[in-house]
Image 1 (tube, one colour):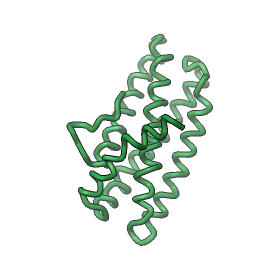
Image 2 (tube, rainbow, N blue to C red):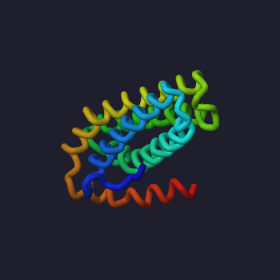
Image 3 (cartoon, rainbow, N blue to C red):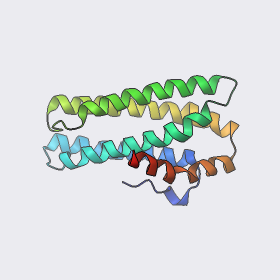
Length: 158
């Protein structure tokens, strides 16, 4: 999975929405692999975790700081809640990493994590993204999108 911009998009919100779709597609593959006992499960789980961690790095470094400054305090409230959601997902991922994904208990934890991520993504796409589209223009969203590579480099380094 890459974090390339879909269709050459240069809008941070489009990039993040694209990543949300990638998570959904990955989960469909993982769920099918688990149901069929496919050995690919052990390869797919670390890829999903990596995608989620990259997405987390982007949102934490770029989206939520931008969100916190808009809409007379509503942005700050949403940003704080989103950061709590992200911390909860990171905690869930730590419990899953290194465990056997074929184990039913581990897979159940992963399923709960993905469910939480999907709920969070839905909230972002229906409340956070529209709020940001109202308060920051396309040029600023493009500036933020241009910073993604640097954010991912920093996340990988440290």
